[in-house]
Amino acid sequence: MHGRWADYRQAVVDIRVGERNTVRVTPCAAGVTEGAFPEPSGRTVHIITAANPRGRVVAPEDNTWAHALLLDELACGGHTWWPATGGSPCGTHTEESVAVTGLTDAEARALGRRFGQDAVFAWSREAWRLLACFGERSAVAGWRTVPAPPCPTRRSRRPCAPTLPRPPRPAPPCPTTTPLSDSPPDATASTC
Image 1 (cartoon, rainbow, N blue to C red):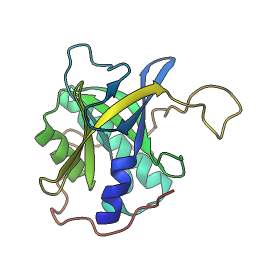
Image 2: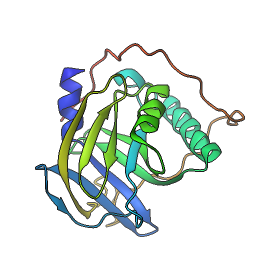
Image 3: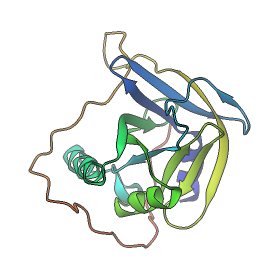
């Protein structure tokens, strides 16, 4: 996971916080916090994906199904979330994600672990943190928000924003996921 950890530390996240407002969160030097923070009460926002478990790139339909399970689990828990996309700064690798409020760091790590993730992000007014899902490893940085850039694959000037997927089959009843193995992931992820 060493190489992937360095990639995660550089990752950017686009969060759709309104119908026409998608912001890009970019990590920067510790202590720097520039731009708008979307959670009015100041609660930490955790960014979690269900895509590409164990760092292995899987078929798009598998990622769509895993994301639907993640959304179902959040709905069952009554959590507030925004659609998000995390990925490499240059945009060569992106993963559909969610930005969730109302979780503790331990709960966010456990949720990431259930979906086979190496790490989750924790965004607060004070810092942008990377939290390992398997273990206690973490990294702290500052953050900066800017409007998300237009999606490079579209001709419109709208920012890239994920659309809510339709699961390929009905979601199972709550609880929707079962814990995965607690063994650490071992595959490599793509980089810029």
